Image 1 (cartoon, helix red, strand yellow):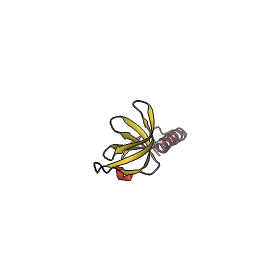
Image 2 (cartoon, rainbow, N blue to C red):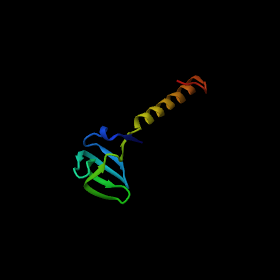
Image 3 (cartoon, helix red, strand yellow):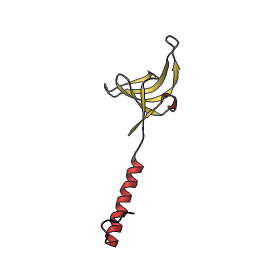
Image 4 (tube, rainbow, N blue to C red):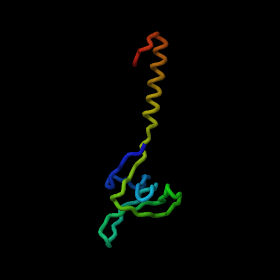
Length: 101
């Protein structure tokens, strides 16, 4: 699952999904400030364009773009499965089909 992250909360050397004209995946390298138009650009390493399936070593994105961080749901899913299994076992042992732990 992807979670939206503000540009000021980006962490160094973490991988993010970036929504610009295309979708990208890149590792955050740091802030970069262009003097021409006084806008904040963010630098990413190994930026992979998901749409065209091409990769570039360095790529700069405006700070107004949307950045997403992958948040694993593995622990929650594992816990839910274990909870269900315990309920099924206890229901069989005590003979109550409606028991909830």
